[in-house]
Image (cartoon, rainbow, N blue to C red; front, side, top):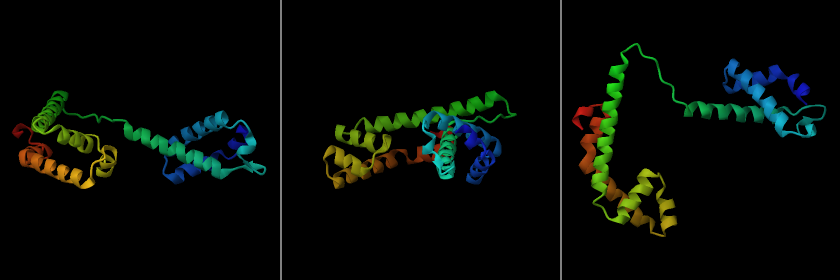
Length: 176
């Protein structure tokens, strides 16, 4: 089966390049495709279309490998190398981290005065990112009740933290 796949090596590379992949990455992904298909396909008739390789099957495999590689690259954090002194960069990050921690402490201080119901809704909606419908369905509470509570919570937080949040986004960390 690998011999039949290798006959179309340049075609596989072109398929990946058409998806937007760089040529040097395409070479690696095609090799990964060979390994994957060799492992997973025990009966080569599953990948054959008559006497030739099923190009659509290979294209889907290559596409999936390419998109998986893009997802992995997005997860990776790349640090740029600066000519500036590292101490200044670390001090800046420390200041930003301190400001963020201060904001979180202020939010926790405000929410600690809320009822258990409101704190739990705040956690589910704002911290865990659940939708209002998901919360309503899971808790058997009316959607309107949850919606009104979330609006009230958002308004309370805006009242107390709007200036601090603006300072944070404007990178005026010393004002927080």
